[in-house]
Length: 569
Image (cartoon, rainbow, N blue to C red; front, side, top):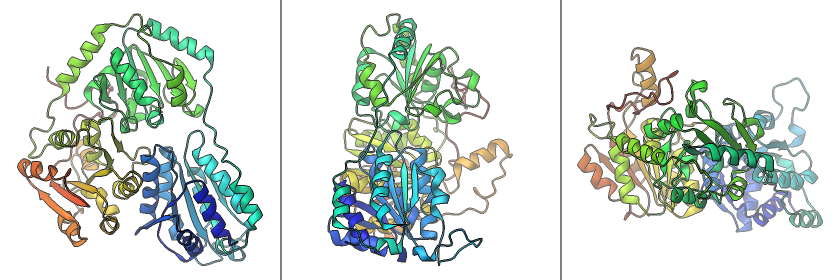
């Protein structure tokens, strides 16, 4: 049997049956085998970076339970995958990346030359720091063992991307039926659980018994835990407040005791809660500078800090915790059961105080703008409440506007590019999310981000998916422009001066996508109301000239609860 056929059979056996690719000479054997199997959904993209993001979208929508393939040919095809590989690495998303490679006899090996074969490139060496496993398969007998290892590692522990680089002659070499059968019958070696030390649980119980103003913080490492929502429902019923990081926000339903997003672009009430609690239980968050602010010593200034994380290297990294527990979020939720007597000294005025501060903070921060981002997302919350929706956000001010204002219901999720923070993420990721979920998907993007992978509007049109693309067009690169206003006296090189953007409405229509241009609140209301009834692709371009701020925000060096502009009263 041809090796590429054996590889296809192995992937099918493990339910890895969605492949995003841009065809090239060194992956044609693999593509042909996938297609001839009749059991693969092959989606041809217009750029390998988009293929990588789309594969990431499949895993994100399935909470890391389904792996998709992103595939590129040798040389530029392989390097174009790197941003997507990095995105999966930083945000702990399991994906299988496969690159084609020149024939083994054409590899430069140890020769002191730059390149031997055409488009030869050592992608394994390039990708090693961004993958859990990266290997070039130089012998056909190593193909299935390497594939087994790759999938096992991608799905184990702190999940992440893996890469197989497969030379063209290996793809077309022969593999015996007996070898294939051996590896098909060998289960993946997936390890998850890290047992919680009983001593750690006792210490946590003692801290809880002393706490009067406890606060739970949900991070990205907890967002896919099966037990998270039921655990937080108990927290809601007991009146225990909780907040989230940007990545944690992806799956947190907006309950009564949820006080929203912490961090540099966080909600005022969330940051105030962190700074005024006396016990902070952090689950699956690495407490980076965007979450804590630059003044680490002042973070959670009155609190004992408990940090729970699957990665021991993240514990006591930037922030020194009073108690560090290395385990999975799901394991923690199972073992640490919230009960009415968990916090015997709980001050009931704490929740009342937080609710009052949240109500005080619910102001329109952009009342001086023609179209307020707060109003856009309030409208979306109302229109789409209880609809099955996946939001996918690009990177820029629009991402933070969304994170501050979106309130998810139980059948909704939002997907952010977290650690990589990659502009151009949203549209291709949305394709993967939509293919995996069959839910309606709403893309939140800006004029800068959309242009990076705008070619995938053609893919969207071809597939006819129920994806709504909302372009918040401020005709500038607003987040960096805001930095320039703060630190460079408004000199706006390359964010406004030297920057341009087209009419996205006209471009969408050229791709055969229904599109609407919005210039007023009335037009915005009319356009957004179309979303629930529209079938197929839809683009809504909201003109927001001059909208260069995210409010509130934290200036570098300021304390977490000293956001700008200051809240009156």
